[in-house]
Length: 430
Image (cartoon, rainbow, N blue to C red):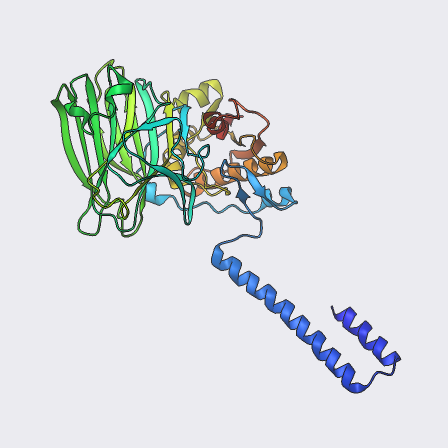
């Protein structure tokens, strides 16, 4: 800009321009310089307020990069600062090995009811301000059945995100797991499956704090209405006044059931399930809302995974351990706090074998640009290494990182479940 100013001045002088004209042009050029500098300052302030970074880590909702700097190699070399995961420091939940059902409602248009669900009431898919993805908005008493979940083995994990409206009135959200003789007919008859006559069932209730007391949860298990489990607890990690959303995790190991809400274990019941019980139904229900235009629940990110992880054996004996329990924010390499259980699981093996060298490799699905996916996978692997060092105390000298992007899929990319399985982190023994 200074060179342009000088050129203009020389040109005008050569034309014997009047002094007043030169002064006006000089003032105008000075204003332009000041305005440009001010715009840069404003942008820097806006970026700082919005939490933006110089290297844009934006990806699409399936975990793939949508807009990254062209110099991807330089981005991967920048220091990675992991999110503080200490809020989940007691979280020992480890998801199952393979995702068999995944629902985030991306395949459903806004305002519609998902075609692979059934209900005796109504609901619609919506988006939420400042919240990622799509959500099933539930504002009426009823039962909602994900028809794609019809088999629950002896070892499985079920996770979902649940939110409530700001003016929450104390209504209850239910999760039911049952062995129904006529699954498609019987699922809507009762909210309370423990009273149902056709077989064994578990009934779980979740309710956040509404400012007048702690959050509350209840679990009941029974056969033909005869209770084997009937218990309730209060917990502290879902306060509607501070956070409207909860991540809820259920973990079955044969008869045993553990339940977590936002990283806090609220139930650990050794004999909740029947031995050898063939459970074939999961549904969600809402009870107690009499103002459907005002009070809502929001449901999304339902993940059913099967198989008990065997981290130690697979890494030390087979030479590779794969996890889909290390999760990241959409459009980012920022770790979700519910990743803590999987991080702690692998860290236990690394600490018990301090001489082992391991390469951490990130993978994405095939959505988005191939080059951007490769960059994203490398950054996510680096974020995992940083979190292992900072959050769970693993020595970093024997850890390497790499990323393969979409190049090595292990499942079919077009399906939601396939994409979720391809988004993974591998630990390879060197």
